[in-house]
Length: 251
Image 1: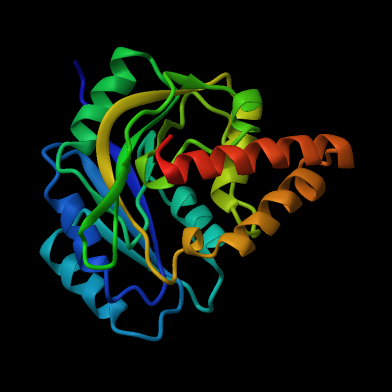
Image 2 (image 1 turned 45 degrees about the horizontal axis):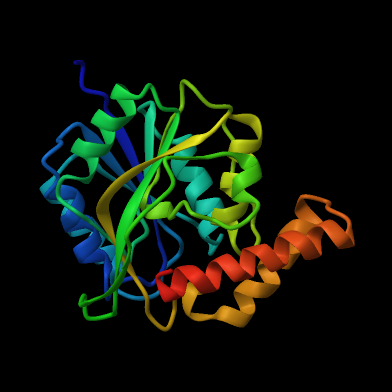
């Protein structure tokens, strides 16, 4: 089977504490056909210096520097526009991949002729200790199913640019969730790979640690972006929050 090349998109803003581990997890991949595009979003710490270290070590690592702080949505969009390969994957600068993430996921994509895929994952704390996990993902998810809650963790995701209608991130809270809703509205489904292939870091700066803020973002997606009426928004919002609680409890 022909090996497909992967463009990995990594936005970075003041990520000196964690980005070294994130980049190293890409370098350690058993699957070698990749490029890593890191978009430094006008960082004011030492993260850019760390990235430049790695650029000198491996020419597959590319650095794009924003001239001002643009936010994660615009940074990811810039990475996508500069991607050279058909398979697009995302890795946030505080998350870490299992060393076989690309190998297993690329094989899964090809074996299933999949346009979009995602995987299970572990949750880790700021020190890297495992504090939980997502032990199952659905075999597939459609736009309609995704309205009930996001099951696609960004750092587990991959899509084939040849098989999808490309969409871009909106500069809004919960941009990950809205991105996948837009993607699945124009494409049939995303397929789930039931292997834990990513370590999702939960810490004080992550959106998942700011529950009340995230709740507001979810409501605005239904009302302002998807243009649902109040009753329809309330229904999906309630279902979404119930499912979010179940996920946090591991149910």
